[in-house]
Length: 270
Ligand code: SF4
Image (cartoon, rainbow, N blue to C red; front, side):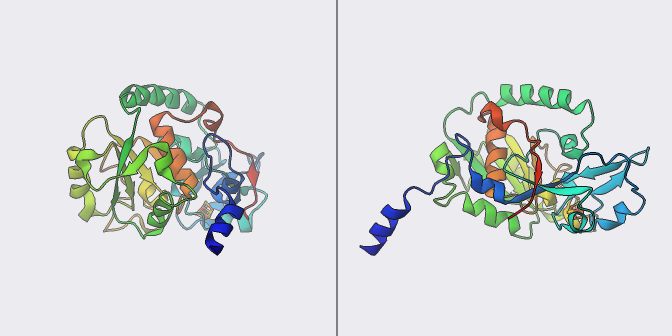
């Protein structure tokens, strides 16, 4: 009886994202970005700040940040808050690997539009229920916790007609975590080959995108991009359940238009 009363008092806790924005999503440091006006910064010592090489400089000495290599350790934000900031929210996934580089190249928007068009044509058939096969290709387990949360009452991915399956034969989406260990190269390829067309491949987390802190190494590829063709890249170490949800819906072309511009203003994590 007390549980029934508590349930009635709490009401419905399941998020209404993406139909409605969820303020809870804005409490996660989803990725790191550059503050405005970093062009004139003295960049000589900055690459040494980053343990994964996500911070570099271009030919003209301007700061470049690869969000696909960032493990969100926060070292740069703590050391140089005038140059780096956390970005909050769910919209972190990209349809093109180059779109994870800040500042974005001028041609990136065109490339993304072309990829969006091709992907839309491929996934046209996936209008009803969609099934996901998750493969751990050398993960440290962090992403798996977030994926598990998608099945709970807060995110409740089933409300969107999206389910996980153990069989590649029933799967539409291949969700891959981990840095792409050599031992998982063949099983990953076999899983993709066993899926019916059309297939979507999502690289979930910084490790799956670039290998994170353990690449380069004798044991991993440095991301799964060299093992299978990736359609959607989700940075984060790990990405939040909101970011994973955003990536899946982005792949399926099911996001309302206001969720498609990921360039949210920098903010502070909870
Ligand atoms: S937060 Fe990301 S970019 Fe900054 S130092 Fe850590 S890994 Fe590098």
